[in-house]
Length: 241
Image 1: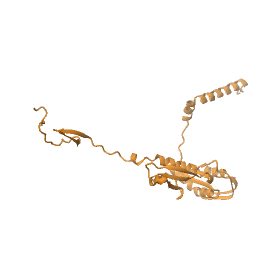
Image 2: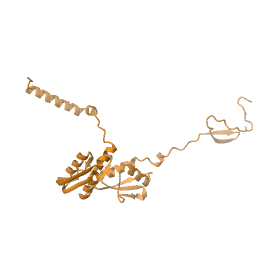
Image 3: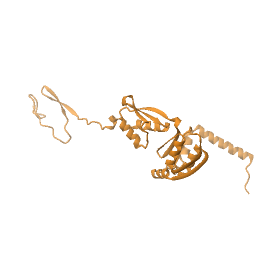
Image 4: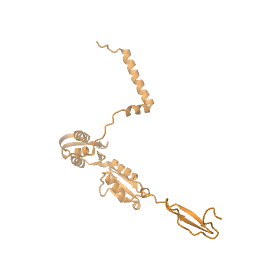
């Protein structure tokens, strides 16, 4: 027969738990070491993400919060849907039908929301959150910046990106997270000066012939020095008088 815990043992166990929590609070490195031992689960592959976005869905929503509908689609399809805190409202008498990403796009358009995909996640925000940001190009051309953004998978509308400050900057308009990602991409592009290989430096030497002084390029290793004519009063061989 198992022995029932006494009040004293319960108090002792509770005290030990409180002490352990205090130790972790005072020593965050200890908490990090314990957390690091957890198994890291890899994210879904690109193929799995594409399949989830193309997966066909068919929902009839009678009356539900928008956040609840998005959470349901994410749970059933495996999509990672990031919803802004400003996404509010309800979905009433609405049917989501078709490929998951297309159905979500139709839902966003019907409820005044912005939607974009990046890094395997679907980001949803309210239209009212749309922001405008100025990004300097420094030594980067507009075409190079836009090509880097497009290759990363971000798609801005034709009127969402404009030149500013005489072509030395771009303005981005869109969801806050999307604009922040675009700015980070532009800032990560190395300038042209850094992208070019350094120019070859030709070593030189100064040669005095009589009263004249000349600067000549050093010969390539393992090649003979060019023959020169000794000037007046100069020795043609070392050690000769």
